[in-house]
Image (cartoon, rainbow, N blue to C red; front, side, top):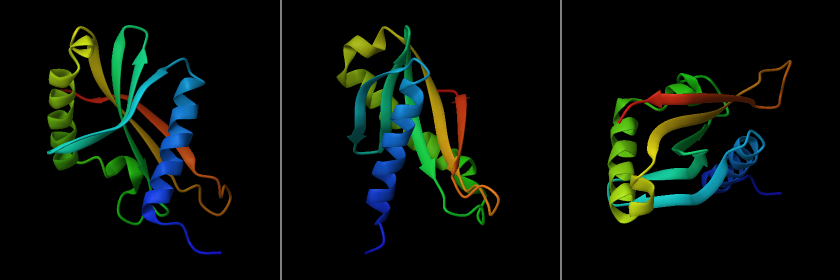
Length: 125
């Protein structure tokens, strides 16, 4: 059996994040919005709030873990992608928006399953 590529791991993490958020009442609007300056993994709604979700997964916490990888540089790219999304999809611009992060952190020896961390309103536009 061949090892998973990073793309496959990313797709699996996004599918798990979608399932996790939908089970908590959010509705998926779009996946993988891409533009020249950045990308948004999941575009969801939480009632009347537009939720722009960054999904991160790490196999080890060696370099700060998944949540810590949404650093200021990544945040700037997400903001740029969000501005492009809102310009291209006027129906979304009428909604309040927030950035959420779903981080799959390594569970360690005692818990081999990855821990899900949902950071609502992780940073501001």
